[in-house]
Image (cartoon, rainbow, N blue to C red; front, side, top):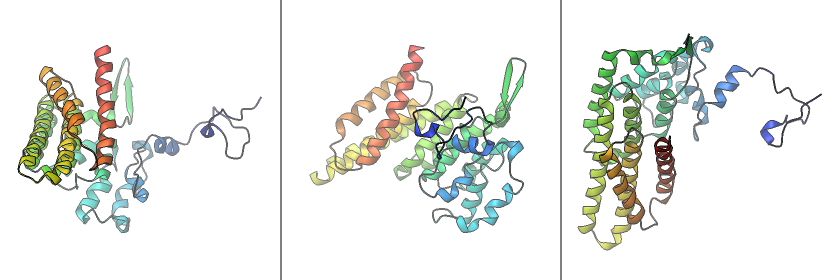
Length: 290
């Protein structure tokens, strides 16, 4: 008996011959399949890959030095080494993220940096099973209370640096994701995520006040900027455990994002944010339902 695949194109051999559905998959192909993709700069994909401690290439730590010719223009030399080394070894990824934030060694407004850090935070990685319990090896640092306190200090410092600079709104989601991730081990980080969301909410409110001081022709663009800021605040606030005040603020901001946008400006960004928000809020409905 032979298997020629199913109805989907990915379930067929390119040559049309029979395939073995039980054959062991190549480890690097499997890792690649479950690794995010850079939509641009595909030549940097190797920086995203983390095959696990047992499969790390012997020269992985030297690759950032050997491949400096691949450094994109939006990274300085120091930033390049931080970027390319962040996922080089699995069990120090969290430390690498915090060092990059502490030393401001990455351009946190860049989408590539968001993708790299998100891939690091939410990977599965090596798992140690003992009896009925299991441990994610790369999360061992989180069992150290001092480490978790240091996380809050580092993230707070970064927040206070950007809290009064609306031009940095694009790195807010990243900071919010990091805060909400660590909140499971350091509750103060969830409080910090709320502060981040409220700051962005304040920026959006200030944009609304600018309309009164601007010519009517500027109103559509200002409204678009205002909506984008509300959207980012929603994404930070909704990506964690909600209390009653969070829910109230979310409803207010969701109402404003729907009713203030007049169309024409920043349409693509607003549309993309809308999809992300709907995904986050749908998870909250599932949590309540469960």
